[in-house]
Figure 1 (spheres, rainbow, N blue to C red):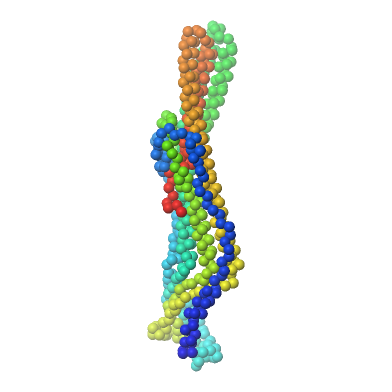
Figure 2: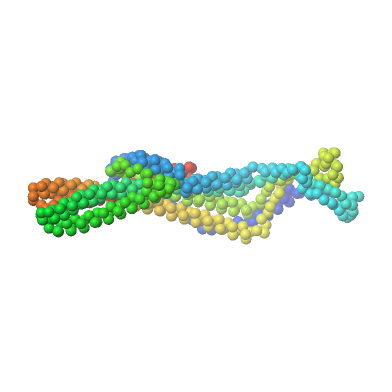
Length: 488
């Protein structure tokens, strides 16, 4: 034993020297992409003058501002029954399970094995030239029992912590994807329901037009047959108008049916459920003012931007993991069990067969620099890709806000002018009706004035829906009130 003492004294120094020499040299970093700041939008916002301050733009349940109980119920059904949304929730649970698995790296591992199942069992022929001395050249029955194994990774370089942060980043990205799915589902359903209400309103207006035209056509035919008061000219004119109105009515019926089917599918229901969707008289606000100021910091909280931001964080942590591979990897390992050349020893005097071992296990990346460098470069390029996707998402977010503002401004102005047009058409129709009763104009003139007023009502319904859809688009462009938890 004494002749081994000099070696034991220098063993720590030798191990330290090997550890220092065993580090692979880190290569130079590849060009790193930079995250861009939020683009300036002062001029874009200045071009749109708000009507009054409305602080509700940052509320998560944004659709409440449309004041439609039926829409509230439909979105509630969709958020609880849409299969795509449930799949997104499953991905969240999967991602957090992966993060929990990675978090286990920080804890020691203790593995237990059955006592009655030996790790090694067999016949051992000891060579005569071995150090076993008098036992050399003999055969023994032997058994190894190691029921307890212990391992612990010494995280000197932060590898395990970086792996955990990368997994948490992916889990947070999955949560942002779920929020994006919720936002997309709610805004799509809101648009479709607004269209449904508008088409149903237009269908009712056209149905009234058809009823009036049918009555007028019957009267014109009766006059022609009985008294010859009118010529065939008004009959033919009314027949053309009635045919066109009936075609429009059928088109609107088809659009209403298709919208019902689409809303039912979004809610995770069948077509029969869609037939039961109530269409009450529109309770939406006729005018929807902008907030006094659009908070641009909401752009960084949009779900799609948050997804890319968390992916950037996860990619950065994977780069750190790749860099730690250039340094020695140290594990504390140990086991406890029994070893014997005589099976009776374990049964009669197990203390004599007890053995254990505890010590470090060091892995040195001496000849792996090429492989490690390739992996590091790949991770760095993945980081660059993630950053550029984030930059693209930021630009897309700014553009969507600008587009939504432009759409809102145009639709609000068109709605104001259409109100004036409808008011003028109604006054003209009333005046023409009075003139017809006084015998100053023909029945065709009266019908044309009435139809013109109906057309303006149809136009107003369409523009109102367009204005409300621009409001939905602006809510969507601002993230729908989504708040990312501790966005990096």
